[in-house]
Length: 165
Image 1 (cartoon, rainbow, N blue to C red):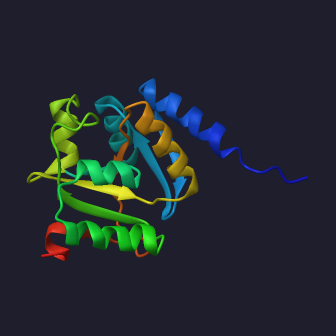
Image 2 (cartoon, rainbow, N blue to C red):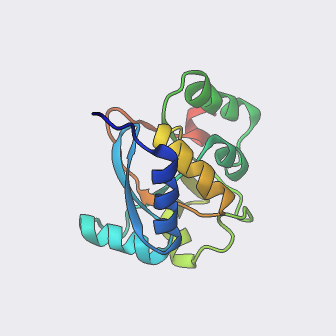
């Protein structure tokens, strides 16, 4: 007998791991990814993957968070909405961000430095069914989720300030 996945329950358990300073490995639209919510958990991910410290993180989030965090003009936001919402494709965007956003304002300076560059932040949106549930729970709990940025053929990164100018 095949058991259906418990997406809501698994997402709640993943959130609890993140809230306790742990690392989660989750499925997403482009494969699997490791995410953490603290400087220490991100350092464990980088150590485990033997990843160079100068590499930047990406923040997993839902579209509501993307709209609030990134500072874009209407045309740029409409392009992101077309790709992520209208065509239901995963998308990472790099754009200026609100430093006063509740998810970001209390981050450690090292975690913020490792997750931003030149006044921009990389956000991974519309990452699949499980990440959608986890992002909804994390948003309600004011919990960030960062992981090493991964570039692949299936999941393209676009710098919003270049793509839309």
